[in-house]
Length: 185
Length: 208
Image (cartoon, rainbow over all chains, first blue to last red; front, top):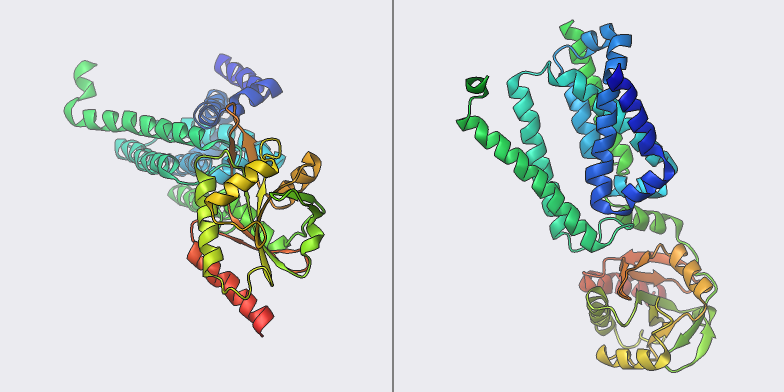
């Protein structure tokens, strides 16, 4: 229960107007810090829902696939330049961001991850590797300003942020071929 | 049990498709800029009332151009990257139009959104780089900041100043019809396509 409370407090903290303003003022922090932190808040609050509706999760997220798909859909949706732009200019989109990332990405991620087979786990990581590499290249190479609220310079920084995450995933996936975790348990 | 799981998977996928479709206007606009252009083309806003001061220090309202098509770009002269390309491409369009239309049926207008630095003298110097004659292709500033802001807002030009006196801004070719309505927003990196488009409009309206 401590986790749930921590998650809730953290969620409320992220909603404080000065915190929102600070995190959204820099493009890469908006995308790679505020958004993941909202997912983390949801992840921490997940046990509350799992305890309240155990049959729902058991029934509709039996093998974890629906949940992880929902997680990926929400995550990739917020990679669209327009979604990020409109979160800043249209209040309804901003509200959707604060609801979707914790509850439609954080909660299902927690419920799904342990249910998934290794194949699906690595497949998810591979998917992120591909999408983040693609998005990273898009943000770096785009000759035009993708987000009207951010400078091109920031866009390139964000692109490299995507590439960095993708590189980290790549390293993880490569080491799977050489390292057997159970050797160390 | 398996069945529920499959239903959930299907629902999630459908939700995903719906979400992406709604968020991108049916997969047509992945950036706010594309969405903006689409909206502009639909709304066709009217040119708000502004007073221009051109490179020849003439001061006149925009309504002086009524009865004429206007081919417009928004720029500032200290710009180092996009604007020179934008103006070079504008010159390409200018050169590709038949001479009889130029100045008669269509006027080219480069509007500066940096009125503080872009005084008539600066504009005259800048004009020279692009073979603009100051008559059929004018370069002007809008001295009144409130009027300028209203125009930028109406035409969806987003200008963000940075710390070094530069601006980040979106660029396009804007075509305003003789009644003062915005009728097209064209890709400034495709001057040939823009010239063809303007030509066909002029042929139709003036020739036909």
